[in-house]
Length: 91
Length: 183
Image 1 (cartoon, rainbow over the protein chains, first blue to last red):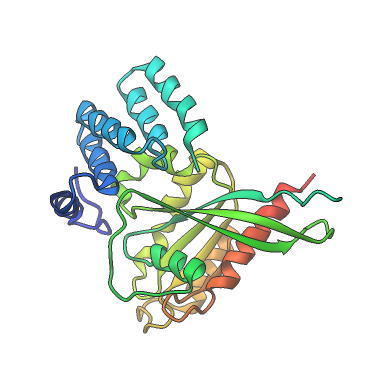
Image 2: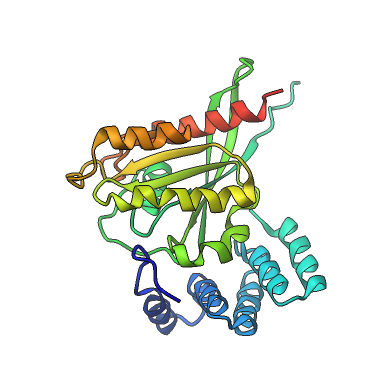
């Protein structure tokens, strides 16, 4: 996929650096889940996102992002469940 | 004994390209601090600030807990993350960089993405880094025309000096409140 002229080009590198410094960096893990999903690796993205939610079940936006990925994966029950969790978890 | 008035909650989202100063604007507004080092935002950052604003109905001040969502300014992830970020948002700060004209035109795509999730919510344009020399092709009249055409309030800001920041946040909160209470 072509990169936008305005996109930060080093995002993947930045994520890798942050995770090297701290493998439990939730912000970097959330970004990594998004990068994986955008590259078509939905299952990998979901696995990382589940890890984020185990570490912090109230991470902002994570349940709704999980619902989006389940929808893209055609998993409607899981999508609904994630959406319900989002209602309780959001700040 | 009278019951204290409830604190109203309001979700406001930052939008705009990478390194326009979204995080710095929040830092200036909430902490009145500025740091020259650029640290790219990853993931989601949520910051709360309680402020007192006039009740649009005129019955005294209202306490509002503003929940500011700061996001990754990565346009290629925008569609993927739009529901995660923008669900329930009541207002948008659309941030451009006074030194990069292309960041202004990019606000349309951010606005479309947000509105596809949150509906037609108030948008306030911030042209940040006004303390720096402007992009020479970036005329004041053009900025004004851009926001006027879209019906968005806007302001120049500088997260570095604080100019325009407090006032802009307050104006968007008041605009959202006014819309909430419309019949």
